[in-house]
Length: 495
Image (cartoon, rainbow, N blue to C red):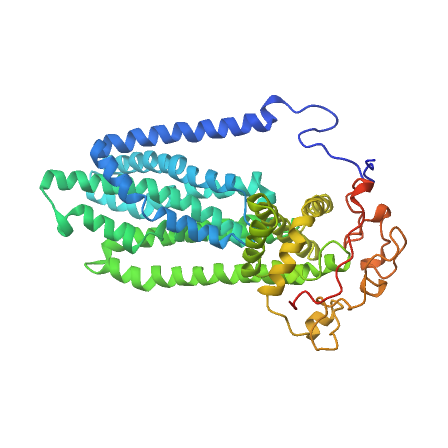
């Protein structure tokens, strides 16, 4: 028998009991966006092919695609802690390769021709266009993708890593189209002048754009992404910060882009000087920041999820297995080999993603940055975890036993209520070796009975489901689903 939820239900896409207008429907918005990107792609394809010729276009396409898989793989690796939906990445790449590239080509050409006509100095117009017009137009066009994801996919945009990934993928798509144009044009020049081998214009262009600086465009736009990521971490009570920080990141991206484009005007070795003095250090610094942020996210998972262990939603070893990328991979491998093949591995991967989102949500909530829909989102995430627990919990416990390190009991973990076992190790990560969950650790006692030791002093909910750490009611299930089963008595880190 299904149980009605003790809170008002919410139907997406409806407001005040009325159906949404036709332009508010999801399929209409998606259809319009796909049509816009497809038309932009066709127009940019025609423009590039007209400028490079068919043969030059094919050569440029073959060479420009080489760095794309490596850059996408790097950004996807960075996003593995809380992977965003593929549709966001597809949109970002398509926007950069089609819409942003089209805006840049049209606006840059128009502005350069207007400057040349106004000043009667074609050489000066090209220099001004490259160092002033192009950075402003191109970075603004790429930033539009980050802004759209920030506004309309806000649930998936929660921090700096999300901003870095969306911005980097957008810039990778933009650089891909731009490289086709430059390499195709260089090939056409070689066809006219007879350039061959390493002395050809194509080889020189390939070396500079693909070998030396494939990260240039992603590096610029990542600064904008960091600004939006900081804005995502800011509270709604600070509207000025949410506006000014992304704008500051965009201005920094434009400035670095202008410096890079203007390096040729600094003399014979100006390009190498800018590359060595600014580009490489900036790339190293931003790479360190991205990796540090990724490790900080894993630490947040390990620190926030124990509250759900005490409330009965997660197994005792799960916070530490979910806080280790190696343990996560081992859990997916174990599920695929022993628990049901690819569907089981997919369920474990989804469980890991939902648990990570839950940890980040709690982290933001404790700092007053979760937003109005935090409680409903928490219930939704807990419901998704509960549906996958039969497969995910054994896999994660196996990964914890075989991969994740056993932490030393310190004052930090003592504040979460994890005592040491007689052996000196945490027994099942802080749970006593006796069977079940005593009230002293915030667990439900008799199902449905008040538990004064639960987090925030809230009672355990009816029907045998644990309360969330915030004291809200759990998402109800059928009676047949039953309460969370008690965990085994052994230490999950002992084989």
